[in-house]
Length: 115
Length: 115
Image (tube, rainbow over all chains, first blue to last red; front, side):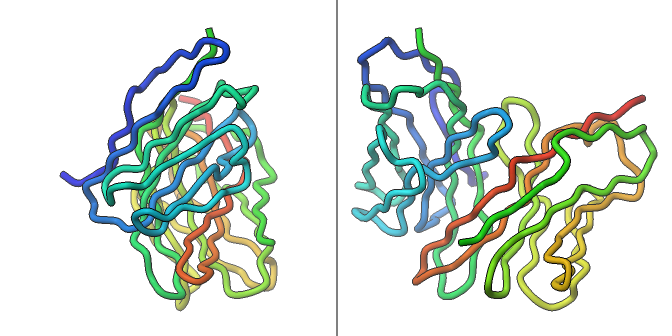
């Protein structure tokens, strides 16, 4: 079955350490997204990518970086510059199209905690 | 810029009772509207979407939503809830800009079901 796989499900980071969250999709979607979810704040967009080798900052990109070298993969790195990285991170993908807005499909998330 | 407000942070209903979750949006053009559901520790699942046409849309799991342009609302309803409906529900509005597909989410409504 097609879907989005995020790994690991739980991740722990030490102070000053960079960590990378994996997101892989086999839905043949062009667009991919990373969101951060904190209690009571809904989802906030970190980065998004419409096509391979291209990505744009979302609303809260500071302290994060991404790459999009393959259509299927959109890894997110949480750098040491992100001072409050503890959160639930969700990856999503969608078809890319014209003037409309396509539904986004979500992975099951990665919960990042600071040791 | 678009925004979404879900006025109710937490709602409790009895099993078998009817349900209505409120969503108000702000967007200058015709909105693309979505409702998603999230079980604890999981990703988001699409319940239904509105793009155009009939203002009453049917979704999965017996949910429906009604788009009311005059009230800028897109409320989610279910005639009779089941214990398995306990989850968090997110309303989102989308904007397609030059192919980009950005969603803005509300803060979510947590639904508790009393037996």
